[in-house]
Length: 372
Image 1 (cartoon, rainbow, N blue to C red):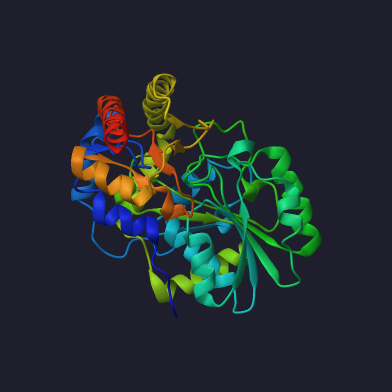
Image 2 (cartoon, rainbow, N blue to C red):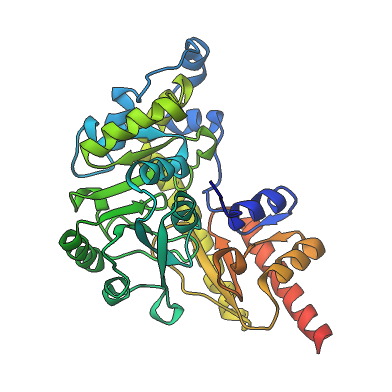
């Protein structure tokens, strides 16, 4: 099985740990167990220290499944499978449903797993190109013209990484009607969903062949738990739980317990996340008003956006030089097949965001002056 190098993850691995200003992180400022205890006023360490380190509930505890279901409008425990993060959840869905010769439709720019992983299985894929002039939003005709007899699945990310685009309710309803007429599954990675739940219902609440994946990594600030899930049709969940016996077995008792606690106190954690994101969106907006060489469509949901810089330098070269010179870290657009763009995250401490953007501006204008 051939797997193409995962450009964005390789870039993060090679650059994220060696920066002063992380302006590309997708996970809202991570929390410690102590911070969680202080936020929810509960002694967690005592429970953890007395917990037996066996496999834990193999398919996830009932408490965890109930906590996950609280995020949705429909479903029972039979509609939930637990995984090692959303990336593993996506993998299990694709491995279970896709076969060599199947065709999938995904988006670009978007997360590379959604098309490179199916390609490794032997699937063909086509990409709907998002248009910045249309606020990075697709239209239904983009999908209609790409459907083939072999099309098995639409694989989407809403809100999108890296643009932050949300597939709004009206378009999702059109996509469902289109998919239903061809018996096509719709997999939506909803890992960034939750900052603004008024924009669209979960695909798993809207469509009988709709599959939602998510995790605690982005808006819940607990990427280190590596706890994700799948919500979908019972038959699919049964098949995934069968497959998990060959892959992950369980997620372990600590992760199960802590994930349950996080989701049971989701309102407190999401209030914290919204405060951080809104403050950093305000900082970005104010910075964009002063910086005439960068523009951006600022999304309504999620934790990221896609900065568009208005001068001639390949994004990989820009990011490497910028980080070496100043310690400012971005993910280059080339990791998403889109040059002259940078992924920006609304997730770090506001002081880091403000100082990092100011440093970026100084570097831009110094570089442009030197180039001239």
